[in-house]
Picture (cartoon, one colour):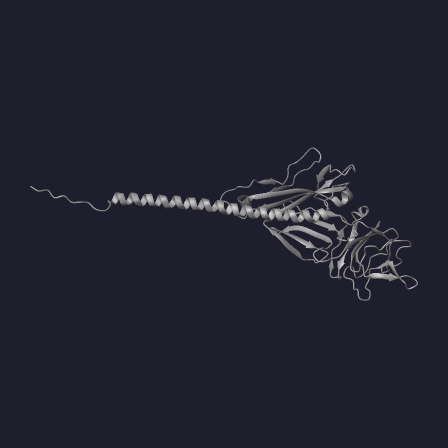
Length: 357
């Protein structure tokens, strides 16, 4: 008797299900690898961007601060200077190379940098006796060397507020002869004044200091530049040019700074400190002419949000030190969803060479 055999073709149900299971597992693994790879890619790209923003911010701040104090009279550091632009914008400021206005808590400090770009840097003039009879009178100077039409200058004297002014021309002496040492600061024929057009608040006495700030020539300009952070962007307001803030870098969380203070007049920094309760940030008993350096930190954030907390609850921008130069590093508190981002710290110490020399 013949037996008939049936040949099986294809896959059994069990084999099909096993194949599907293997395929699903493979797809899951592939997607998991791709997800992890994409996460690393985003973190790497975001980290590079944070490094770039932090490095650029630190460079721009350091470049300006290294020029701070050029052309300024040290004995008048701390004086209040009255300034207005066309009468429409008032921007009174402190005569000092660098002024740090402390930001509360995590808020950024505001750092104002002042310097001259005059070719006669450091050639400080004086008002000669008998001084100015009237606030609108020309300035009788010890020398007008280096002063040119449209140059900006600061005039300061003990006991009175200083002023920002603009050179509008040499005035004539009592005999009608042009006297190069009688320098005018008011409107004159062909030379209208932009700054403090209402004139000085007082007639400055003999001995008052006149500091030539220079003027804008091409890309070179005197600086009264104010740096801060708003909406996670580093910005600068060039107060001598306009009242508008220019954006410099994104993803900047804060900037913090401290004064490098020389307590014993040996041109060596003994401590880094900032008084958060003072408008100018100076510790009690410290004057601007004791500041020899600025310690600065820029905190940036990588723009990739992680699934879990990756940042500590508090970030110390630089280590504390109990030995000279002593310092207490600023602390930035990180809370809530902000801890799911990664942060980068950029720090430097900038000597005020125009004060040291």
